[in-house]
Amino acid sequence: MKPKYLQLVDILETMIQQLGQNEMIPSERTLSERYNMSRMTVRKAINHLVQQNKLYRVRNVGTFTTDEKLYKKMDVFKGFTKEVRTAGGIPSSALIEYGLLPADEKVAANLNIKEGDSVYKVIRLRKKNGKPIMVDESYFPKAIIPLSEDIVSGSIYEYIHETLGLQIVTANQRFRATFAKPLYQKYLEIDPNTPVMHVEITALLKDGRVFEYTNSYINTRRYELISKSYQ
Image (cartoon, rainbow, N blue to C red; front, side, top):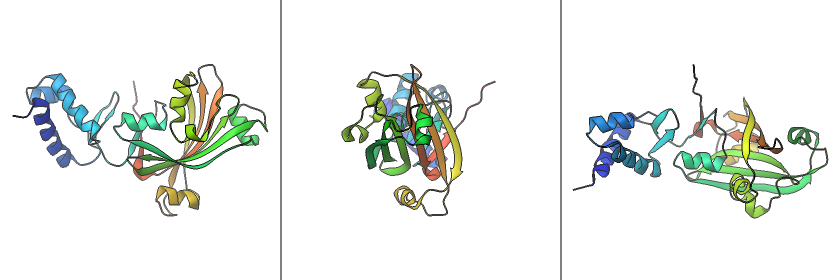
């Protein structure tokens, strides 16, 4: 006989097919009472399906059936790699451009540095489970975040935390709808008439220094924002 958690996995897989995409499943407590199983067993079954990318969790909201989209809570800021892993997916990046150059007026103003100071420009295609989600145009001040091509091919935020020992605390994010330039349309696998979400990000370290200025161009068919209001 199958272990109890695998029996529940079978039940939940049928439920997922019936519910469709992006639908909330019953809570752990409800499932525990409905199928006379411990909360630990229910959690183990859900974890199994999250690892298989059939379910994803949104903290303080619930557990949902998946599709190709990446879901981001607007009141939480974390790097792309962590966002995808939290959703039970596999993150990857393709490096489009990397180089060191003097900051122009706009980049310098957003990074709170002098015009002409050295910055790394990094353009990457970000993917979840091999599907293109967004193109990031990022700038990092050389004096704060020394980079290399090997580093930018992986998770820059993990490098900042684990290697540089710096703590990322907050970010200012501005959202607007726009259209991507033709090169980015190709990378995002969209046509010229498909709008994208443009997110302008200025991120800060715990000591108040600005370490990143990024413009992200997001395929809205594969990315969705979630906002939860509190009273």
